[in-house]
Amino acid sequence: MRQLLFHRATAVWLLLVGATGLSWEFGHGLGFGSDFRLATVAVIVIAFIKLRAVYVEFMELRHAPAALRWCFEGWSLIVGASLLMLYWSGS
Amino acid sequence: MAAVQPEEHIPGEVGVWVFILGDMVVFALLFGVFVFYRAADVSLFASAQLSLNQSLGALNTLLLLTSSWFVVHGVEAVRAHRAQLARGLLAAAFGCGLGFMVVKYFEYGEKLRAGHTITSNDFFMYYYLLTGIHLLHVTIGMGVLAYLWRRLHNTADMQGQLSAVESGASFWHMVDILWILLFALVYLMR
Image (cartoon, rainbow over all chains, first blue to last red; front, side, top):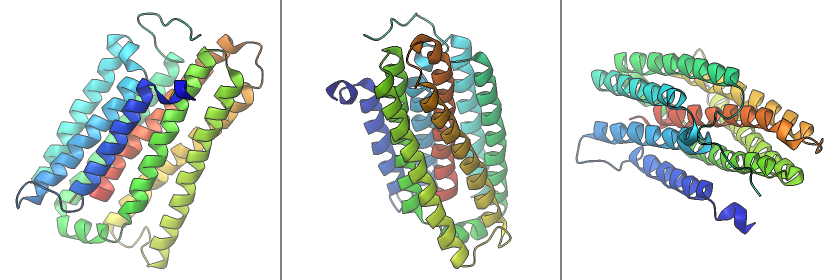
């Protein structure tokens, strides 16, 4: 049991849960001054930090060949930037 | 004793990674379409979003994150040739998936009773479409977990099971990744 709990994956899980709580707050009024759009930008950025933690740590891409890892990093960068631009264009 | 990891290692079958990346591209396009149409009618999307239950969305995020934690340890248990522990961990992950489905059942019920159906407006069309396709992935992932659980009954060749377990685990983590983004865009985006 100790082996299971005192593990790198547990630290990542705690980080992910904390980040979920933070993004929940940003979705409920927490923000940067009067511009609520910045709170949504924070929600999107936190989502990408979270999903990156999942593929680097849980999916073990930390130990994968660079080409595979870069497929995921590229996906994150392109999708993240596109979503932020699309969001900003409408607000 | 965990098996020594080589410096570079692709977990599972290469073909599974091709499938995962393909799936992630399809979801990226769907997410892009959602945010594009939201940008064209922000007031409709924002007001319809108010009827979503964000607490249930957050609860489902926690369930999938926890299931991923179980799966990570399940893979490690297979590497350490501990079949019973691995089966227990995969069963726990399956239980989290089941919890996700129960939450979704109540969530959909709540929406339908309030009169929000797939034809109500564009927001709800995308809501049902995106969460529905994702739920299908959860279902497939749970099928994979159940299959691996059954397979691990044969404890004679644990090393031979590893590739299948790693493949299934990678698919399950992808389901988690897609939900993280879906929750941010559909539930939390203001």
